[in-house]
Image 1 (spheres, helix red, strand yellow):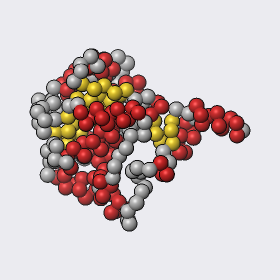
Image 2 (cartoon, helix red, strand yellow):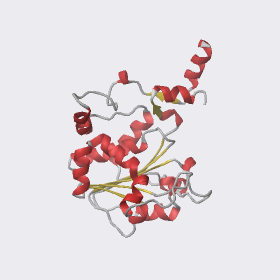
Image 3 (cartoon, helix red, strand yellow):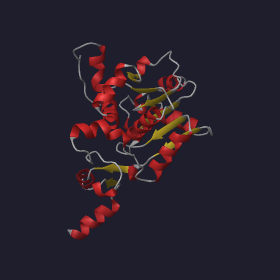
Amino acid sequence: MAKRASRQAATAKVRALFPDQGGWNPLDGGPSDEQRRDTSYVRNVRPMGENQKTLMEAMDGRNMVVALGPAGTGKTYLAIAKAVEAFQAGKVGKIMLSRPAVEAGESLGYLPGDLHEKLAPYLRPLYDALSDRLGGKQLKALLADGSIEIAPVAFMRGRTLNNAFIVIDEAQNCTYGQIKMLLTRLGWHSTMVLTGDPDQSDLLPGLSGLADIAGRLDALDDIAVVRLTDRDIVRHPLVASMLTVL
């Protein structure tokens, strides 16, 4: 059994994130949970592998970055961390986050509430990542004054986003036409990062435009297309253990 476990660990495609590896983790430091949440954005986020390092360097040096890879590779988290970093350093005046409002394999029916309440479940992952980096109080303040805006893809048409850090999340659930529209939203002094996994689209077969767009943009020197793999997945030790046998 020990030999089998050792073999599984050696061939596992998911690496466990242990607290003793250093750098920031969701449970480190701080005299209280509230203080930790409200100061977590000052902690450094460091890459856990070469592909993550390449992605972070691309976001520092390019105005357009496409990050492809499976869930758990840190695409969205690293993009939002870089957006917060740029905003805090005064490099941009606004953070713009967007993702398509597409149900992931189950029907939610008609949700109650106004427009923002109906869209909240689709945009929740972006709020979670922002809250992790900024803390609840600062996030609320920045949302209230418009410094951070979170909107579904359908609300992006016709806009030009200047002096902004733009993150388009779950781009595999966008059609070719939608992604083309989103790319043309890029304005002066702005950075745009598209993240997604072409193999995990919730659209009907053949409708997702992410893989096609990434292939076309790969030929342009001024645009970085970074491909993360299942070797870049970093999860809690229990998740890493389970995925070796599931």
